[in-house]
Length: 254
Image (cartoon, rainbow, N blue to C red; front, side, top):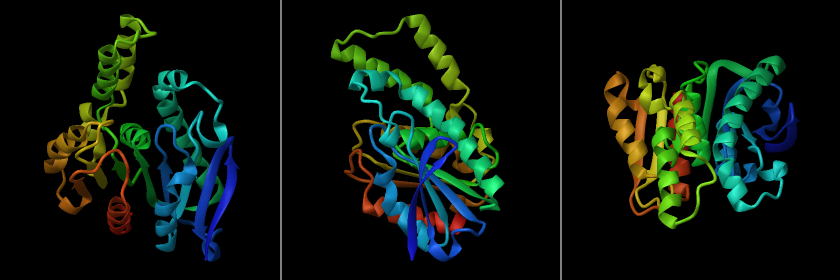
């Protein structure tokens, strides 16, 4: 039987998904971050499938999302996008530390993944944490600097006024460069990486993950450890096909 427990880990609301009989045992762990304006409950399908395979799955709510929602206007929330990503990165360390304290993690078997904003978080985390053993980027971007510039350009094209100065934007780009995986691909260190993206995505450019995959593929001796799955005609929504491919790949790599 699969159990889903609503817990609070050092202030982080988390859905904790495991086989009931193995709940207190050290297990391989997969932490999955939801997308922008979504919530942890929306990722229960992949959590359930992985828990059936013997994984402990943790689904946290990001800042200003789910149980942490603060009724911000959409524009206010949009302006906090990168603050949320940075908080995700900080809280990933918190989750990892808590797993070790509780002795719930099998060493060498910690994975992280996410949808859209969660995929951006995942790519950035690979520049920071060598203890990540495998990762899954679902329609995210490993190019936060380029993605941020795209968002700013979209706002300018819409005719809306930017509430930040050019100096503040340059400061943001410099900060994002430090967590930009495409600018420091050597930090991958051949760790297993799965990328899925629909090629009709109007939100996160398909080319970001696709081009990055072709840039780093030659760095991997084990070609099974680096995987890019393109779904023709798919827009900004993770499909059942994508979830099944991710689960199948992760089971072999983590």
